[in-house]
Image (cartoon, rainbow, N blue to C red; front, side, top):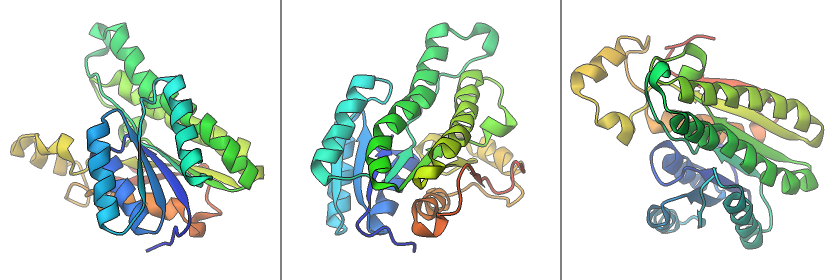
Length: 248
């Protein structure tokens, strides 16, 4: 396991799924973890789990689509820990529908949370990272950002935009020793995919060369690596964790 001892990390969208697993993995690697999401009760439950395992967790109720809440949330983290070393932009929503019938509110909501929200969080993370002349920013995109997916024009556009944001910020921040990378999961076993019928899951597996869906640990291991000192010469990269589903 890569060591994140004495590091402070923020994980958005941490109340469930990959975000929750990421927070636990970063804590297990030694980081003090601030977990952010809209559902405070789920965050407090996660913090209790982190502390029961011997880690340090801190819950921050925050909607990444709200600039004022983002600013206030990051201030809480800095007031609590005095530094920020790692930001994992994981918060995301879906509002699926065919493009020709998609309501503008559904388009705007997904772009605002999945792309603008990441930008707002990066803005708040940069000042403490620039002062320290070190930092790790990891954006969670998706395999569909590279392959496309029908019925998800808004989600695909936002996740593809996140890849562009990753590359732009990697260039901007390289001179400050701040790396910016992305992780692109494929189909992962989470509560979102658990509800799919078995025949749908089996059909999905036929599209994956490794023949199985990914586990949260497959994704969190990649995130912990990119957050570590060992990944210090990697920036602007999209790390695909998709079982070979899309080769880029």
